[in-house]
Length: 183
Image 1 (tube, rainbow, N blue to C red):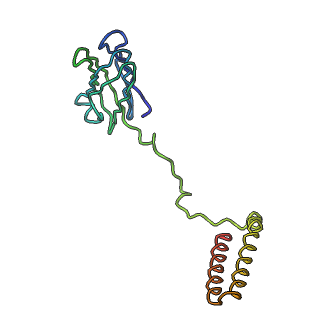
Image 2 (image 1 turned 135 degrees about the horizontal axis):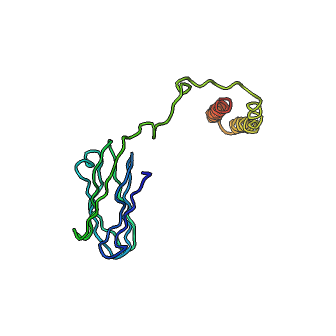
Image 3 (image 1 turned 90 degrees about the horizontal axis):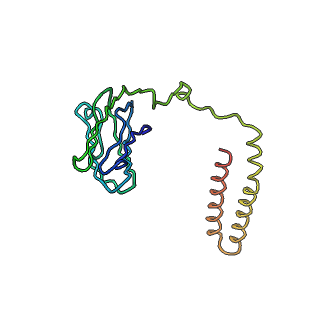
């Protein structure tokens, strides 16, 4: 909601409403209720023409002293013209805003998509950076070989069946690591 209709309450006296006489938009907007005095109840109402194309999340609002509340108004369709009614003090003061909702521009929030997105990506050609990456991972390969030698050495001392299982596990780990390195 990029646009805001500023509404000042209690600025020039209790229940006083200060709001622009008209407001134009082509999308959802918010009504900013700025209370400059004592706590107050504010009622917002969209007339029939506006309520056909827009909606309020809530109509009755309690605004604390010296605070501001933003009330979203969601525009579903357009164009339309109508009145937004702002009431304070349970009818003590009433103000009307002529709201003009222009036709919603579908291009405004759209994301342009060109035809290149429909084509599959090609795998990049191997380069020197791939070779340097492989060179950086040589210590990992050496560590895997050392782990394999260690497992075989333990197998000689303990049990060949256990060593065989450990060697297979290490080989699978080296294979998976190698796959991810060259992928």
